[in-house]
Length: 220
Image (cartoon, rainbow, N blue to C red; front, side, top):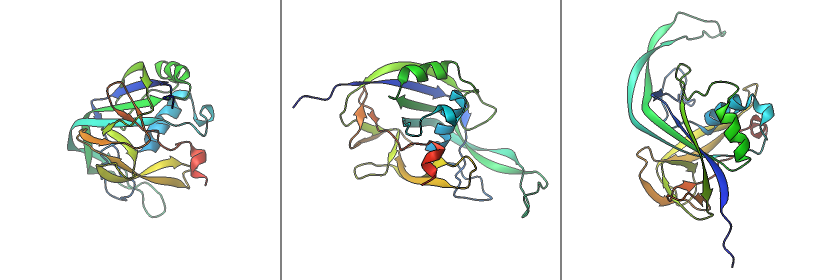
């Protein structure tokens, strides 16, 4: 049997001094997530492209995430009353991640996405509106072979390890419907498990495409 040919992917590495991703399963509390939800990353890419209308509903990416540390600081919280009206701002604890690195792999039109990310329509931000991200782009060849999970965010399937997370995958534009998914992520970045039906980078990292994050995916 002939081995599958390698495929070309854009590998985009985003870095920031701080990031914070609120867990939407908790209301009235600022509980943080150890990694960004797929919907958050998809939204960042949509902003770079100038809006969801510039992205195919079937567009997918794979991602890995790791932070060097974490902590808690204070932020100004602007609560709403039962009728949705603003009330008195109050200080509230917020969990944050220090020196995070997000790596994305895009195989669909990698040259187009290289141009988009080099010249984004809206500034690239990762989890905190006040912090712009650093960005490094390179082209890599992926082989259709199982790679090590390490810090990848993958769907919760047999063989994957790490913390099980219930995360929003896609959100309707009017925010009336959310498609959720169950994912696995090892915040230490040391998971040696191999990811079934994944691609593999030259360094052995598993690249496992996630479900589409386009708002159209939340319609069904």
